[in-house]
Image (cartoon, rainbow, N blue to C red):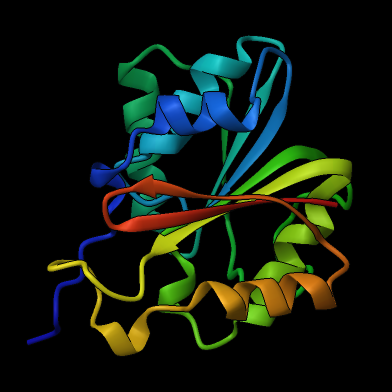
Amino acid sequence: MAEQISGGNELLNPEKILKKIGIGFGNKVVDLGCGGAAFFTLQAAKMVGQDGIVYAVDVLKPVLASVESKAFLNGVRNIKTVWSDLEVYQATKIPDSEVDFALLINVLFQSKKKLEMLKEAARMIKPGGKFVIIDWKTSGAPLGPPAKMRIPPDKIREIAKMLSLKEVEFFEAGTYHYAFIFQK
């Protein structure tokens, strides 16, 4: 039987985090690895309003169907689902420099191709746009993925530097999560 790993998004406050990073009316946002619960996708869609758009990206088609269903049930019409493998550069059918904000929340720990994922996300961000990465703290969390799967913040900093992303802020996103805001 496969080991169950909680995504952990239910432990975060999407509204508080998205306000902190400055998402607002008319923005274009991409939620990479959005997950079926779509916590951040739905909140971002409310915040960007009818003139904004939120791309919900995931590698699992059933997850995207769940996002579409939740959006419909909540009367949200500004979410566009995109099926893609984030580990493949330029696989996501979103143009270069298209979005104001890219969100990569509780996803990196699941991949061995972290550089590729960050490169793909950075490609979509407009110059001056923000890239938010949230993942599990490397210690002190009694739940979530095994410690060996967690990515230390310094590893993210190292990859971001290779991609010429400027660190704007590092903060505690929740009891068990840390967050980065990078700027392109």
